[in-house]
Image 1 (tube, rainbow, N blue to C red):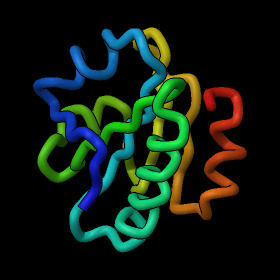
Image 2: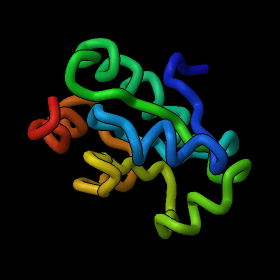
Image 3: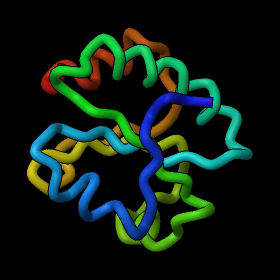
Length: 107
């Protein structure tokens, strides 16, 4: 479906919080239509800006601990992490131009 790396409750700390890079986590679920719509857009952004931001996916159904910790109540939800901290939250599917505008500070 996507070439973004999948992260889990078990790997979140190492893959996201301890990463040197800026990481965008796409919180999604298999049954979520808007999540499927935004996925190829995130793949494009990841490809075009691979030097500045890494995009990973966390399935909220398979990883409820992390979803609960970050208070994910609606999906798709995207959170940008720098140095282990959330620095930006984006809720809902958006067209590429709107996502790039939201992420302008990081890409």
